[in-house]
Image (cartoon, rainbow, N blue to C red; front, side):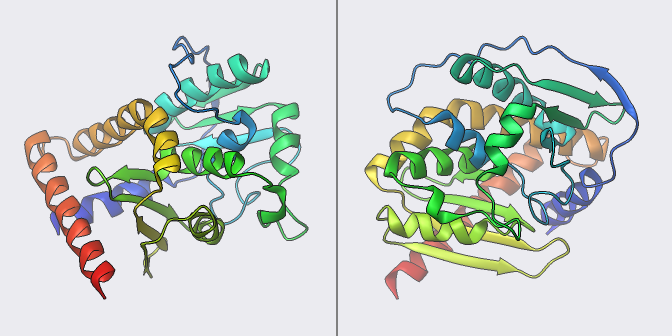
Length: 256
């Protein structure tokens, strides 16, 4: 319970309004990774978008790609060089005094916005191949996913309408066991526990090292935020308990 309270408190803090622009940052991390699958870069980047309260609730429609919380700096670094490497487009990243970040590129923004309808909903009919769906889900998993064990995965989205797209895509590519959980919190949480197909798992495996780095940054932020109120050891024990609970919940639901 203590961990859950801290995480919720942290989420509320990082959702605060951006402060005044501070500086521009060049990203030194190489985006070139050994991949065992063919990832569509446009759909992968699309999957990473926050879509918090809708695509354009906190993102400027014309040129902005997305916004990121302070602990997501590894994500910003990776995406910036990934986009440069795979799409030959240089994005502008602006970090605020609060260490929140905004990413800008008119070209990427137009590409991303083309996937949304008149009501700012993500359009399923823009996805024509399994490769595009796998790439999109890999992007979602990178930013919002977790590997509970060797076969059970979890995606947790906050106030995001694209959770419905994720549900449909998981079914469409053949994921048989999917457990959906809705937490009517503030903010609302949409959680999917599932067993990916062998093909989808390859896409998750390709981005797994980067996802682990991002998740570590999030956990380090929790420890830092509490200023010694919770240690890394305490956090690791609590996280293992949460993982075990999630696995048990999924297995019970799968047997019904």
